[in-house]
Length: 303
Length: 335
Image (cartoon, rainbow over all chains, first blue to last red):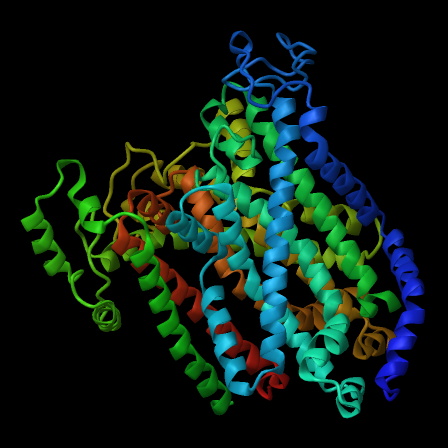
């Protein structure tokens, strides 16, 4: 395939594609953890889409007389509020269900913004003259020199605390990883014969960048996307926890934790459940990411 | 090798300049007028405002302000805090030992538990121990550490009453702190119970801050070990009848350590980011909490100087790791 002309290569890829997907699924299915992760992620996505219609109560409705009611299996709990209520009498379960959409939204937006920006800049760095490459990579080095959460915190302080600004900040902070990854794979792909032959046949730089090289660089980027999805959720929750993310009464999980902090010794459930929700979601996505890596990385397939 | 060191050092210069520029620029675009913030509730008259603006150089062109700041930074002058009026440099280095002490403890915990966990998992690949350890590591890796901290507080401080909730030492102990490291100073003070109190204050923050590095090190050690165990020289050693224990400890682990050491070095940034959350939750008087407080107080010189110092520190550590890596692994130098 390496010395074939670009049309033949394209044809070969075209014929190969369904089997490739099948092959991917074959390896992915091998990994039980990854499949469990996928299922949890599917539930999470479902809750994110339909949360407000599934939740038993309105997420912001305050049942003042039922404030700080424990979960139903504890004394004083009732099945009306399965996971208890928070200090303002809002139903924990409903808030958790509705909160899924904020984390999901954060993950989707941050990953799309960071990945598309990072891939573009990375492709540019890989194809541009040396001096442009050097400038781009120095700028990325500068961003990476700051601890991500600190940089995001200062960015949010500048932009003003809100979920949208938190997402922008996290996307900026995560973006250099995509640049580096894309550039590194572009650099190694560029020297291969199929790229040279495409060039000889007369493909322009843009075609080389997006049609010839990019599809072959996607595997590590997909894995990175899964991993930064979970990082984005964690960082957004951390910002919310520090009061710099989503603002109350938004039922974002990190913000819920921040609101519950003063009650930790009196009402364990207001602290435990939001954190558990974050942990399970992030864990599922990381499992998924590990599975993707194993299925997409040919080095591990052999073993 | 010299060329490699020089080229690495040369890339440090523009990055340092850029980091200074960014931390300077951030503060210029932060909302709120610094002089009005400084004046606080009392407000400020127009004359006084102009006077202060001249005093701090806010009325001068922005590039001149940056130039002044940059030359100041090179001489170790990061300006004074708006709140305490003390030099940012002094404040940073007064609080830094607290963060360093906590980070070192966290790192020691992570390495002491993470390395053996990774080795055990790799040697028992696919068996029960491997699965159990790696599942635990993945949970640790996915942990929202601010929640983890709250859980530990609920159990160990709330229910069991074993550990204190905040600070570095009980208030009833008072002694000079020449080193700034509470463990050393409390031991040197000779006061009964002071050292024990310092340790009890350290336990929970150390666990919280060490969790993610621990998981990362365990995972990294496992994969590095697995890679090395597949090498020809390991097979040779096995073929000539060397005991598995000897192969694992002498042939495999030593070579697997190289990437692991890199990971340890590069997790300094992660530690500092974790320190922001950990210190805030445990009221640990280090630079992480200092930065968060300053951001909320809009103490611009502190945010600016702190960002810069932290970034430079991360850069220096990364540079050192890079060079060490070049020293160990000649292949890297050629790039």
